[in-house]
Image: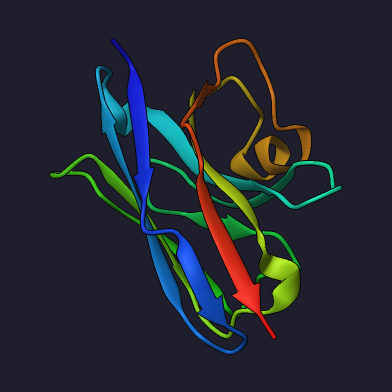
Length: 130
């Protein structure tokens, strides 16, 4: 059974840092794009960051320079290091995976979000207080 399990969310003051983790199981991890998406209160879901099997990364403009996506293929684990957090980063953060080739590129996946083959985690809450 394909499964993504996030951890590492919590509450932090503005300017602080958090690292999210996503443990993947049940599929061939290396043949997927991996990514992070978020949905804030009263907002639509947005793509945050994505990484392909070669390690190439892409980020939403709102998090560039502050967030870093990475993966440990040996551990089948995806990470999101979040620095200089702002109150507007408050959201439920979702880990996701999609087979490479479903979208033209990870950038397109961040923009389009969904396809029947996308696997979603259950989400982890991040709250940034001012």
